Amino acid sequence: MLEPSANPELARTQEEAGALVPAGPIITFDDVSISFDGRSVLEDVSFSVNRGQTLCILGRSGVGKSVALRLLMGFLMPDSGSITVEGQEITGLGEEGLREIRKRVTMVFQNGALFDSLSVRENVAFPLRERGGLEEDQVQEIVVRLLGMVGAEDASDAFPASLSTGRKRAVAIARALAAQPEVVLYDEPTTMVDPIIARRLGDLIQRLKRQLGFTSIVVTHDMRFAERLADQVLFLHQGRALYFGPLQAFLASPDEHIQQFLTLDAYLLPSA
Image 1 (tube, helix red, strand yellow):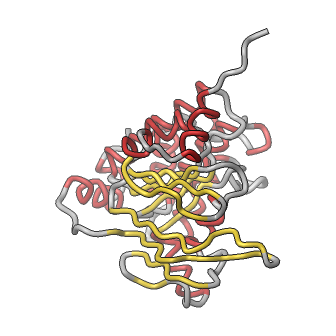
Image 2 (tube, rainbow, N blue to C red):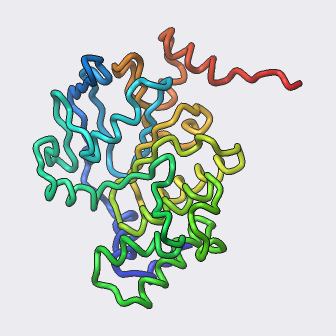
């Protein structure tokens, strides 16, 4: 576990996690639309995420789940609508303004997006050095603690190419934490990993919420994973937000598209 004394800024984050925080959303999408080559991908999508909550974005492949994350990071710009982070409109920001947003909102990509030429240790140290203000021995101490938090301390000298998909994602989470964000976005964290690794990743995301108060947005098609994590659910169907609200109400929804999604997700092929 990352101890509060490891780094003053991380300690401050932990203290704030246990303190009273202002009510209201930290992330808001308001009637956001985007299309590619004339094809609508998201159409008038609205949702919000309060500080410390976990939102799971669900839906079949190709419905715009990952596009929503890229819009939030400023990698894409919507055709219309508003996206705010702590009340700040980001859709009109230039690159400098977006860099400031990305210090508060970070993303764990499907492939981990690690630097292949750097060891695991150096990957996690990168955002710490980029931020500055720390001596090298402090950087190394924080790296060790972060890798321990995600269960990858034994891989510190390895290079990304030698890691399994699940281990790459764990290291990517450690690197994301090193940036000391307020919001962490996860793009399909359980894709191409076995159920044991998926469970470990889910446990890790839950621990980060409990211990550090992180706000999380998790894109997934895995309903079992979502059931373990979600405070709120956004269900996308054909580019529209068919449902936004609490998990239990989503599971009980009579909507035929939602029930079909839940039924297909629960279906298990018979063993040979």
